[in-house]
Image (tube, rainbow, N blue to C red):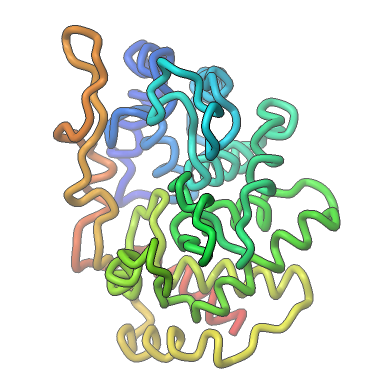
Length: 313
């Protein structure tokens, strides 16, 4: 897009650089927010993912395949001693987005990273949601699933399945869709373990770009209506009416403003001069992220998504 052309070119040049290659040799994900993965994901969200250099895509695939633990470690012994749990294994929201970025580029993800799709299907909780907190799976008397932990995995199977859905995939999608409907796209967990999500849910009505792995009601509504469109299933009006009414009222001119920044106040894990990875360090940013995430102005990407939603409605 012309409005962001110089910043897009800046990110493309960075992704093609030796700096980016060396970063991916060290880690596929960290640090936030200025490392190859975040540039790639933002370009994808803008519909510019095919501009990622081909070499960078391969560097990234290799980096993701180097994760030493390719399961979500829940039980004792699943995370080998001596490994950093924050760097040795990815999480659901990360992998859901990885799948979408690579599939959108034209990569056969099931061939290059054959362990991701089974992962996404494996860790669905009883209520259809997921959670990137491994301890949530050990809770016995309630189901503390998470909207953030669910949405990108739902999108990955929904939008990026290169074949007719298997029964397992249909079941996964149906359960996840009903999870979103049960939450009416806007309600946090009612559990004790995940009580903090009820506070986080207050921000979900604020559209966010780029989202990266975060959730807002526009993202949830788009995914749910797309599921109904693809599956032939029906979404009860009472599952979405509050969100639709809010969006139509709050953005009466159909122009969606960016009202939240996904990275605000979020630090990073950073490697120090001694080679140690330290948590809760200040994060750095890059021009494309800064320009696309300005608060209070129209986000053309969110406005476009709202128009597609209204067509489905």
